[in-house]
Image (cartoon, rainbow, N blue to C red):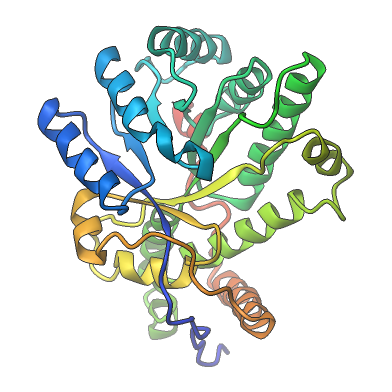
Length: 323
């Protein structure tokens, strides 16, 4: 049987690079973003839908001074199409968007589908920044890292400057918990329900480890060559931190995932709740990291006891489109 599974200790400091999830709303929304930027409460903006080109240019110009610190980005979904969208469709829409807006800190936001991965590689290879997501598994994230490296290598082959190329992988933490918790509730036992709300952060820790390994010059010869040419690591962004489901509190995710260099995406209500603190928190000690990973391994074993595999509970967008 399964013993009591205690959560790992979390450091007390809190400081994050904050993406602001914003629904385009005209001038009033733009003024609010200006206030948040000037107050140092947000570092980038993720739009939930299309916006006029002049509004996108204005947002990009507002955030441009933050580019030197690796922030100051504006992500916007490419034009909406039916589910059966191809990589060519995504490339066409993203190229048209980038050409129309004409700002280097604009990121076309692509779905985490097979087509999206192909488009990410092509766009990076052409010198455009990209955001991909949401991702819900470590396997899919590893594919995103490979697409990132492929794109950087293509850009280097074409003689482009790698120092300004940016890709962001948005990892949907809360979406995993919602799906896993439903399966645990279906299992019905007290032991199963005791595991609720843990799978999302556990999967995120595994993704964070994969990110570190992929960008370790001592482990990856591909990354060593690209880093020497001026390439930047892919940004790993924690998103879907609020679902309106009891027990899924944004602050819990922030406590678990706040590490040096981390970034989170917050909606307006969560930004007010957390105070929108930005910056880099004190790093975990080696012992804390070991305890966190040991906890993740124990949790994975416990979930499998109930025939729950958190790596597969959220269907990939391509799979969902086929049903």
